[in-house]
Amino acid sequence: MLRRLSSSRGPLVGGALFLIALIAAAVVLVPRLLGSGDEGTGGPVYVEAVAGTWQRINPLYASTNEVDEDLAALIFSGLLRASPDGTLQPDLSELPAVSDAGKTYTFRLKPNLTWHDGVPLTSHDFAFTVARLTEPDFKGPPALADGWQGVTVETPDATTVVVRLKQASAPFLARNATMGILPEHLLSGLSPAALFEAPFNAAPVGSGPFRLVSIDSREAKLAANPASSRGRPGIPTIRVRFYSDYPSAERALSVGEANGLMVRDAETDARLADLRKLKSMKIDEPPRAGYLLLYLNNDQAAFFQDERVRRAISLALDRQAIVQKALQGLATPSSSPIAPGTWAYANEYDRTAPDIATARQLLVAAGWKPQPSTGILVREGAEFRFTIRTDNDPQRVAVAGEVARQLDAIGIKASVASTTFSVLRRDFLSERRYDAAIAGWDTGIDPDPYFGWHSSQMGTAGLNIANFADVVVDSLITQGRTSNDIETRKDAYRQFQEVWDELAPSVVIGYPRFLYIHTDQLKGYQPGVLFTPASRFSDIARWKY
Image (cartoon, rainbow, N blue to C red; front, side, top):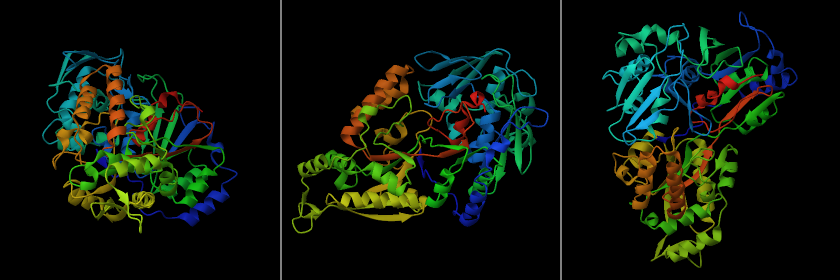
């Protein structure tokens, strides 16, 4: 999905106050929290600071609010869950049996599953959840409902779920079977409007690794669920504390009010340096699954109809330098449309170092030669000049500027034009009225590149905004999304990355990273690729300190 991959939701403020608090707390910090008991539970308490507050703690609505998404990841479970590399693992169900040429999945629920209130969890709860989100008046994100359109759910008994698709879709499991399940016995009979406003959303009952004990405007207290399908969590109690913004959350971390913080917004260089100085804390930099890229209009921009030119631009860029200068070093340089660290990634086709000599050769072969007096590339009397469009995000503007600077060194003149993201998307990208553009693409849990790069998605109704078409790529994408054999899919995506390296439909620059700051006494956390910030909790049951 086309995304801003934005790193800022508001102005960065409070720098001086934050710095004072940081210096004052340099010797006290978080260790005073470690090993302290919690009322009625015993054992250590892990305190996670978050910027923002809760609204509806319900997996059908949570994706619209980051705090809700965090809490839902702790409280609810799906049939399956994604591991840090994107492979699917059992959760409430074992991995399903696949039949009918990939169109039917049969799930067997694990024995003795219960909700946090002790009521047995059955296949009917899953069918109830799907029925709620496919109702015409569903109030949640349309994309969630779209994944279940035309899908039939059957429950032959209390522990069996049969899901029938109209056509085989390998991405279906990752995108839909990981969805949190709702308890029918508490919500049966509610209309979509009533469910959206239900008191349940403020006092949710799930089946996940943690149950909600209490919640108010300041914090949510959660206790380990000993009956969790993932096993009893190693941390008895988690407190999720709500702060008005990231500077406030960071101050809480610095003075020992919190053990962990996921930083999702951009930081100033000064604040980033201060965070790295925190004692008794560790900073992990988990990469996002989404990438930042230079879109090249393959169809409407005459410059980029030639694959040699597109490949030359890709080879000319020093991605590491772009990451360091424009993204504060918080990205993984990459030329691959498949996220590094995921099961489908093929390292051998990921070129991150520039190759200026080959880039120049390709440009000459395409008819572009430097003008003796200016050095600007010229072909048939026309100079190689184009505009890179982007939105107003400072980091993406900086990326566009650094790309333009590097291309200038090989005789290509690029100017940068920015506007709001809505205008960029509506007036330029959706209409394909652009030469080149810096934007982000969110790959999601499954690596399937169909919507972004299959030729059927060209035109204003689709998301192939580069207007790229290639029969080999179409075939590989189709193979990868219709086979449920993981090795077949790996091979299809390996070949897709190989062809991408040759044709350069556009230029992937890198995968931005989050910052997850946590006490250095935390054990069991595995920093992998984050498909959403909340997926940092995918292995929460293994955490200890």
